[in-house]
Length: 363
Image (tube, rainbow, N blue to C red; front, side, top):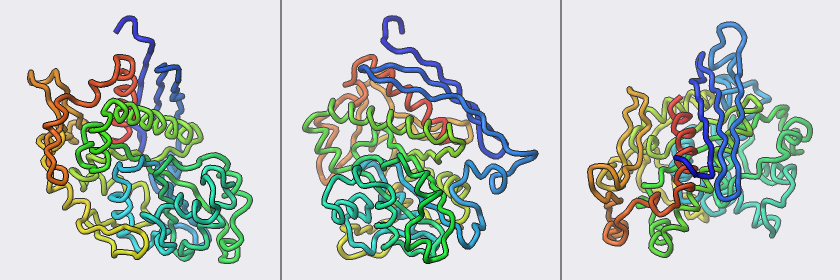
């Protein structure tokens, strides 16, 4: 597309279980830039996911008794983080922050309550000290769900390697391994969130631009850690709710220490969290038909197709989400896909980010 202020080369090769990812993206949009630098990570000999390929797993199948995993969710608010959390909570080896009785069991809310300031300004050693007062330290994986903004991701290496929290040391913990799950939500699935629907009615273009920003940030997060040889797991929310067996396989492969996960698990209500889940993730997905609810062309996993949002140019119609959200027919108020509200350069940037994340959600 001549004249666009953007140049893009994307090359992604399969990575895990003898697969390797190399990705390269150069893009410019609205004065910002993204770069996904090429990196090839190799195991020794015939490496397996559970042994020499540990860069690509959040925790080993049988972690040492003095080792723990700090699992951080890189998911935007109102983008399915609670659904993902409920699946992870089906493992008895996962520790959460729910007993602190903070909103949605989120670490950010606990930090706000504890320090009375912007959580992003809290030093990493104090973050871990605070969380360690709540996590069940006997469990293998410590969950950190922070969705209001993406987790503070700087400075953690020094903390987990050199200055573990006092309470963890007293508990005999010697190693804390950071792990990350990036989950993105395709733009056309906005009707599945009542809060996002209200924002769409106020300013649909602002919602589309917010989604673009979040996707670019998620690509940057992946770039950061893949370049260090510890690539995060990337999940597509559409796969979580409509292809639960596939999502389960990938989650268990990345977090084998958690054992078998229940994709339809309904956690008990915890007072003070506002987290009242009445339906499991798989059952929730079964209540929606992808095309009629959201204009989503379902994935064909056996063909390597991740699925995609349908565009107005397809089938000769202005295709939009058509669903009842709390009794409101949202299709009556918005007749075009949100992506068409972005300018040409923004659309190209959005599609570039999807190209990378879609690929990573399939390996």
